[in-house]
Amino acid sequence: MIFEILTLFPEFFSSPLKQSVVGKAIVKGIIQVTAHNLRDFTLDKHKTTDDSPYGGGHGMVMKVEPMARAIEALKAGRPDATVVMTTPQGERFTQKTAAEFASLPALIIICGRYEGYDERIRAFADREVSVGDYVLSGGEIPALAIVDAVARLVPGVLGEPGSSESDSFSAGLLEYPQYTRPEEFRGMTVPEVLLSGNHASIEKWRRREALKRTFQKRPDLIPLADLTDEDRAFIEELKRGKV
Ligand code: SAM
Image (cartoon, rainbow, N blue to C red; front, side):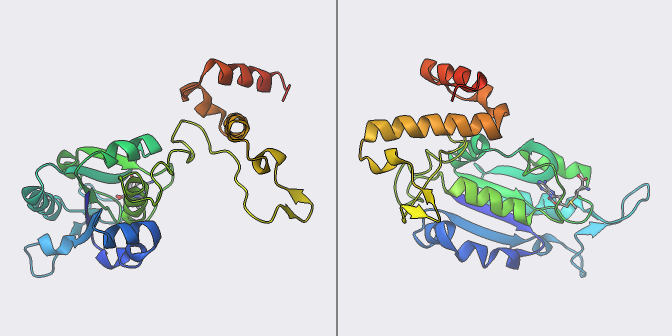
């Protein structure tokens, strides 16, 4: 899968893209990530990418011409690419969006700065995506979050196939609690069932813990989750405070 990032700060990406899961996926050639400098698509000698807003007000606004030129140049090389604009005004980026993006051949991710974009830049975007209800100084951190979350779902990127399937949100629930050695730490012990070697009991315990945890921490996710009759009966017990 191909990720093309349009940014004023391409060097922002150099270290994060060398690390861990994403770094290894790039080295293996499973994904390709390129950060392009928006200034390379300007035509004036000062390489201007922003200007003051019409109507007055503080801050600068990203100009439409360099952005349009850059998107068109990248699209010429990858006509099948989906253009994703990072913006706090966009649809919420979720695990579902990540899975959807992972099935696409290429993403062009555009990073805003300053007070944001000239409104006409929106005409060049296929999707507008927000990483949460807060305002960051630029689209680089959202772009990295998108690359990381999407790359994990590209086949071959995670060592063990299926290891993202139990991650929080993948099945609409938060992940069950995890433990590793030692068996006891300062009086806190690992639940017996995980030491039992009984895979059916472990699966049942994990499912119930995922349901319980989601019910307690993110009850808003429960109505959207894919639940069995047994899950629903367990939720009823949780509501009655029986477990
Ligand atoms: N004035 C803009 C507004 O109120 O919508 C915010 C501009 S913000 C300071 C600069 C850039 O950071 C945005 O254009 C966008 O690329 C990025 N950004 C900031 N917060 C974001 C968020 N929650 N999700 C995605 N991108 C964000």
